Image 1 (cartoon, protein in one colour):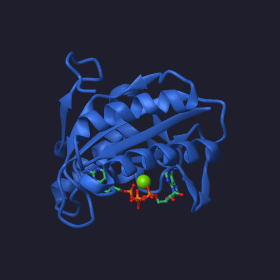
Image 2 (cartoon, helix red, strand yellow):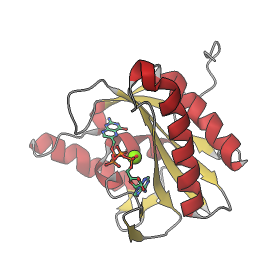
Image 3 (cartoon, protein in one colour):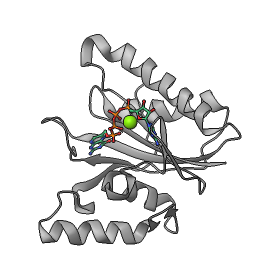
Image 4 (cartoon, helix red, strand yellow):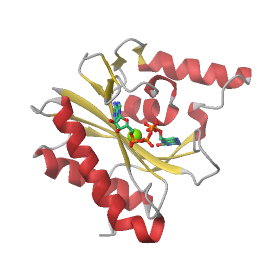
Amino acid sequence: MRYVIGIGSNMGDSVSIVRRAIDEIEAMFDVDVDERSSLYRTRPMGGPEQDDYINAVVVMHCDRDPDCVLAGLQEIEFEFGRVRDVRWGPRTLDLDIIAVGDIISVDPDLTLPHPRAHERAFVLVPWHEIDPEATLPNHGLIENLIVRLTHDAQDGSRIPSSSSVVVVTAGDQAPGTSP
Ligand code: A4P
Ligand code: MG
């Protein structure tokens, strides 16, 4: 099954956390991700006033079922959260399943596609970078969703805009990556 996973962090060394999270995902599910987006610095959407996020999206193929993958991702979140808990607080890493193939599910424990993905530039723009033809089940081409977000932002009716997403680093290959 083809998994699209959204990664976000806004506490601690978020660039390093997002990179290490991708390594952990590969180790957890014993796969190499097919594609990984650049890392994006994004303005926080919703919630209290908080720091900018670092966001990225990866695509992987994995035989395990979605419940099992969600449990694995939550384990990774917990590991990062626990490590950073004392120093940075609990929200160091957020791993969301954006989509699993064409599966549609309204289960609150695992809603597919992710119920807010279609309105989030910080998910759609990185995903579009690695898969420009991608479609979000129930919502169509992600390219069109990005265009719509941009238009809505210009109308002043919505905050999100792809223009609020800035690439901070291309991929995971930069030399001198901190451990
Ligand atoms: N859950 C249901 N469906 C899914 C899914 N497709 N993927 C359930 C992952 N989890 C899913 O998640 C709460 C519950 O959702 C889980 O127990 C799971 O069973 P959580 O990760 O514990 O809580 P959360 O992520 O804090 O809550 P929520 O409402 O899902 O937050 P979001 O929607 O993930 O938003 N702004 C920027 N710029 N970048 C960000 O990354 N992220 C958020 C968090 C807000 N603003 C942001 C960013
Ligand atoms: Mg989440």
